Length: 560
Image (cartoon, rainbow, N blue to C red):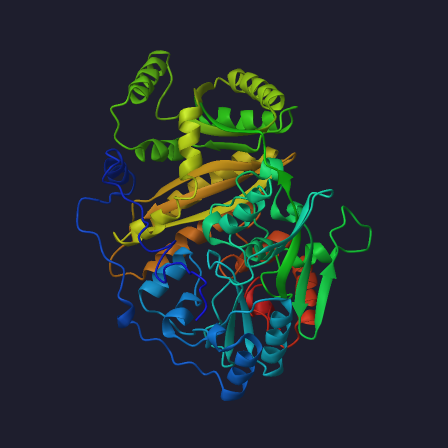
């Protein structure tokens, strides 16, 4: 059997790693105040896989034999566990359903190709049999892009790209690397770093997501201020379609009509299978620092980030949290009797004496990379902007802690589910001129949704991914649902209120999580009905039989 490692079937990450609060003395009181949840009671346990009723595979003998002929017997799996792993992503809806054993449609077989030729043969075989093919990377998707349509009667094949995980070539003169699409973030960086290079792309899902998945969902990374979003990083690729292959060379820029490259980036498997891509790579930076700052309030932090985005400085990370997220961050600190902890307590007392309202402060993290002179210059420019807006420097210590823990947040979703609470995220992007409105309206919409449900809920936000014209706002929300009422129905009230607020106030339905099924109801409001017509026309012309990941990306009533 293949040695590709998958995440837990019931939650985020790998077995043995989870969020714990026992060493964080302020966390339980914070959660009690925020959503009324007592963490000192017994926590639930993940369900037993043996209790699931997994639908039988409907893979027919002929297609099964063809798939085994293409990739080998050891790389075709009909095992129940493997099929369930490939049924859902890791969004809140996915985890609630899989934990409840809600499996209306499970892939019938999981296939692990080794190269583009095998991908081509698998795609052709599935389409010839009028089956459904769903590409699968790390399984970290949180917008519903991986789940087969519940009523799908055709055989469903999950195409796991995990064996295709190598850096194939580095063009040092051009600063480009050719990389297979199935490589997970840490594996790719390890291979690139060994040659003195980095791609610099680090989304929250970095440890459990792949290059192909990043491209298919238009991903952004924490360091996108320096390295760009995946649409900036990706310059060319190989994409397999039924009976043919799209080959785009890694050119710096072209004037060749509507961009086929842009059409495929963000296509979520509906325009074929991305098998390898040419991406920008950079020499490992001489210096790398993340420094924490503190603002007296969220508005001051937003204003500072906007000014930094138009300054001569070019930091790799620009992030600022609102008061609610700042309080959450402070509540996740471990107990400490160190000198630095005492200094921190003294600083907050000093700020209080100076008139700061510590319930309104906003923590910020700024990343710097490059040669010593550049880092010094950037820190000087940013430092002056921070001071102009009333902020102070906290230093490298808190910044380093953020850098070490930046990939841990997704584990909180499982932690809350184990205790009967729902937690999820929604993110958007908007112009600087509308950012405050989007933020205020979205917080208000979430609170109104909680009131409608009669629950105690919490919402927090941070700004990240700054651009010339605007930035990304990333919201996290949580609440304990009422007993006796369907959990996902209650979740939909809150999630829908947040998403509707985005499009009503000048934001987009998603900045980097993609569309999937969860966000597709807002697509026409986001890109217009005529824009959706163009998208549907493109998808239907490439895949008239709806064999390639049907049901994702566009609203259900626009499926052909």
